[in-house]
Length: 211
Image 1 (cartoon, rainbow, N blue to C red):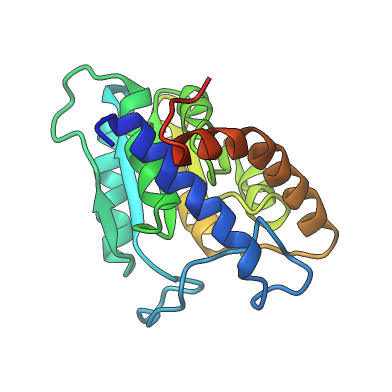
Image 2: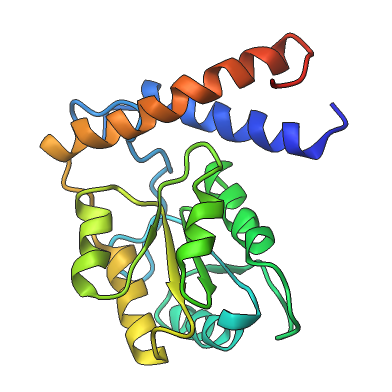
């Protein structure tokens, strides 16, 4: 398969479908169950289960740099996916890098920083298996994890200062999904996604092109 977009879709869809077979960690869960394997937890990092993928556009570059250093200081393993400078770039490209890392299992959680956080969440949400949340305060951040099982956080470098961003990112990484009635609702979100990605996967398996 030569088309890189088709390769991305294939990997991400496969990741989504694997969720159905992994329900042991949360009874009653199906498509939205966390799928990353347990890993050694660094001292002082509660809830840590793997690498954190991090990226930004130019609007969030300064905050991304500060956030990366803060998280590493706190004991997280951070995969900085760019950019390396504050030169103008397009947030969908960087949000896709983070979303791919999470959807493929190369990262446990993802964090994307642009000017506000909304555009990146829209872009990342197009990748099967990604539940991206734009958060601005403690309540929305905690809710995104506890109720929505979000696996990617999108924040704004022009909305949050460094102290706020660091605190909210740590809260996002440390908050566990509550399951229960919320699991049923998140599973419905994922079933909507699978209703549309299923035909795409079938077309790829036949050697054709979606649409």
